[in-house]
Length: 232
Image (cartoon, rainbow, N blue to C red; front, side, top):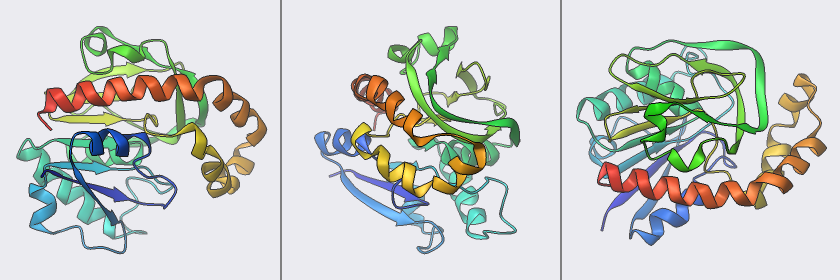
């Protein structure tokens, strides 16, 4: 049986709909809690699939959150070994840093559903079903595209929304995994961030009502396509 390990930074940002996709493929699924569990285990470097999830801290905040150094080293080693690795939001930013790219603040946070624009490379990738689709954005930083990686997509407010390294590594700035039925957990968990950004949670609920189910269906297609391509 294959094993997938997800590194989780906050309880409500979990594997979401990807959990079901992995179960359907026969994976045993485990979580490691960032800042609590050790992340320098050889088992993590060798596991069949590693997913690094999102969270509210910055990818460059090792001085404040020293465990991030372990995550960066773990990602660097896995990517050097070309092992299947998926990064989502903070996870994608950490992947970019592990590959030598810069992560920097945006002029303003991008929170809510907005269309994803694929480039020519993206349209030939696992992300192809998402071209023009409204996806859930929730970030204030953005990554540069690492050397050796290929940019796949952007949005009106953020030109770098996804990158791939060959077929084995995928970084997503947006939250393809988020389940519409679980949005309320995000609104509660990020209530301070929403208030500081002047974002009304009622608007996000309405966006989720309009776009959430459609995105979940597209997510199943994308995750299946990427896992197949990655041999995971």
